[in-house]
Amino acid sequence: QKGFVAEATAIFEQLGRGSEQFLGYAYAKGGRSAEARQLISQYPQWPWVQVMASAGLGDKDGVFDGLEKMDAMKDSRLGIYLTYPELSLLDGDPRLRAFRKKLGLPDAP
Image 1: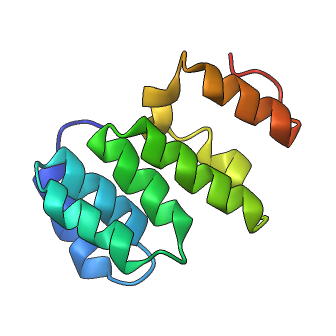
Image 2 (image 1 turned 30 degrees about the vertical axis):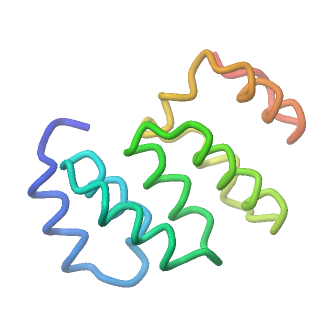
Image 3 (image 1 turned 180 degrees about the vertical axis):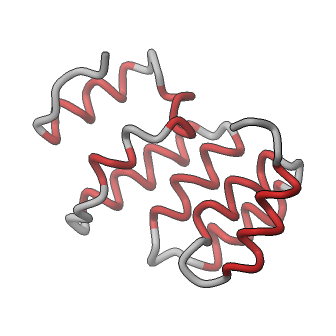
């Protein structure tokens, strides 16, 4: 978020397994959209990768699709993901309000 995309990408690449969602975001923000999309397709069983990489790509539909998948699998981290600044691209999207309501969460401030 502070513009250190190359540094963040290098760190996430070194961390390896468990950081794929943030690596996908960093790839997307660093202009490496093909690699971000590759991570999404490489980990279809991990929708949180789709959520974060899609957010980096500016793909709201992809973010919502991933969130819906997280909800379907009852991922306990879903509410936390909705607070991530990387998902601020969803602010003002009426689908976010509807999704939060579906989850029983209050409207975002």
